[in-house]
Length: 560
Image 1 (cartoon, one colour):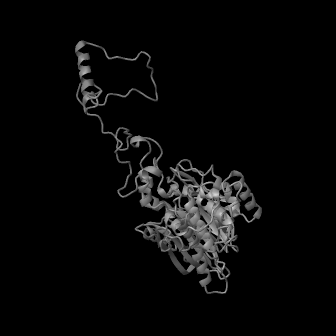
Image 2: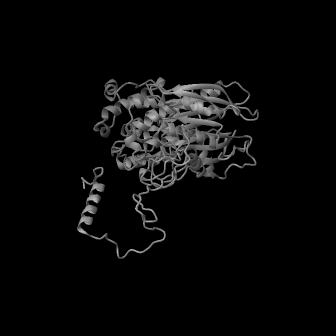
Image 3: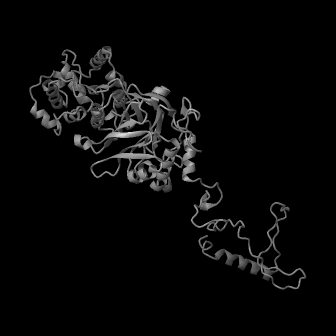
């Protein structure tokens, strides 16, 4: 078999067999079961022909037409091919057979057309701008379209190539191709406000969207990271009155960034809106830093609202990739505005546990409703369950409130440094459990707590809780008796998708290790969502030919 694969070996073997057959007088073998097939006639011999008179004069075969089908020559140039024109290679192995591939723009347009609007698509009759072929009609006058998109930074795509994007062809991951797809999707959906996360090629995107009437503002990440968060807006619809690039490293909260912009509509009857575009930390273990980043974002948005000089108070929108699922404590903290961190596992703040870890069969998710609720009976039920299970009770001896809180905090993997990062205080930052325990030795503990392995950490936590004065100005940094964190817009933020559809979408991101919802558009009262674009039904992981990122864009039409 190996010798037959050598160049010319098969032809030499055939010639040898024919020579042996002619010398031995053998007749050519014919299949007795063969029958004439008009659709597949016997192919005549191509190499030697004789004249019709039978004189035996040699006549070479006629030349083969240029457009003749030659399946064995896959490298043959297609007929009518012009130099410089884009060539579409046929599918299948070796370029044989299959349908021709679409262009990037056609594939992305097909993906946009496959998505559904809820409750109804925009009307062409009422549209502010009807648009051309392949474009979605703009919302009616008085409404604005907001779009959020995590682009998947090119450096991240290749860094986690074998871990998250296995099985996806390199051409699909190519940034040059994905950039064309992203620009085409923006052109098709025509948002008035575009919030981008993992925006690494800001100048390339800005140059591509400049012809469509967009201008952008960028907040880069620190620490040598090459991506960041960006806010683009249509200059014919909005003007930017103020902008701030929030660097979370200034608050000791890792190298993430947020872009906060004050956009003033051209319509004098519409109120301004403060847009905060953010990409929160991914690490599921660090729920303290996630809370801290979210707290800083709300504070910076509120600060820009207070600094705005005008007759009306601006609206606010929080948009981006929050790296938190809809049933997570972090999501409930955004919507409800309050969270008792002693009831929540720090490693389960975003709703996903780290591989190999267990949180008591997702007890933290069960506790989330009680941790964020306002009904005092829930707290009593929680304490009764704790004592019945022996979690914080000692049978004959009852714990004090401070000791119970300290035990819960330590059991949920909180320490003084984590509390300082979440609440935005300097106390405990940079310290370890051992150092803190040696500083505080005077807190009285029950006998059952004193026998625990983490008694020193609990004693340090109790001393910190008892010794820290409460804030008098009622800001978001106040620590109350139950260790509850509250942000400035408590109970006022609402998700556009939850408002229109009744719940969050089933999926906004899909890759090799995750499939779920982490992207949201939140708004304050006074903004009403009229319709949203539902995510597509995706099989397998992303990116794909139709969707150029491992996230899908989320789009909402809102009324200011």
